[in-house]
Length: 350
Image (tube, rainbow, N blue to C red):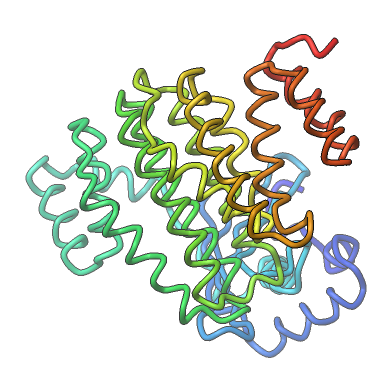
């Protein structure tokens, strides 16, 4: 298969379940594919689905292999991808082959001033592009305006209140792209600032998950929150200053995250904390355990605080105490999991 035009309907049918292919074929015949752009071995397209705005489909060809993605919540090889591939295979008029090299040659004939004017005119009419441009300017200058990015995080998360179920996956993808741009500051020597912003993003996302009523049946927003923790840990690893987060804030946010099954996003961060910070976190968590136990009538009501405490003890290599606590609380099954955490830290669980 040297081009998308060589795809056959039978080959596309083999890529999807029969009912998915049938729905995709229906989408194709009803004109739900709004536009297809081919740039070399890549395809970008939009398909009108059930949501208020179209889904974005991306397809890449490597030899005879195809890789694809879609912003719909389905997750697998969906009807939107089928519809786009059918448009490509049948050579529809809506398929536009973008002459990338011709555009590059055209741009290369322009002076620096003309290119600046072109970019500025485009940015002036597209606020999203302007924000992206500002992000790159700050990366280049190694100057991170924390206030600007906190406001931008708040602005993006405020949209959650109006996101419909069908749009949650796309919304989460856009948030993650923005988070990855912030993570990029760490590669430019601003690991501390990137860590602060990503932790703020993480904390604010959990509040959004709690308060906005977003329908995350697909799990897309939850996975984004967990991925945020990984990005934050990567930025913290690149930072010379590891004392970035207020310990009380870190502990309380981790406990709150567990209410929604999002605590996995914090474990990578905990692993990057220096010993003195972990010791402070241990102290604060002991206080939270005492408070929770005092208020709880059932064990499960203080489970999250207890598990965080023994997790921190495992990260500190304190096998004796976490084993004793697990036995005391009647949760011996935790010990194996905690030993695994300790092994990852290079400790000796024996």
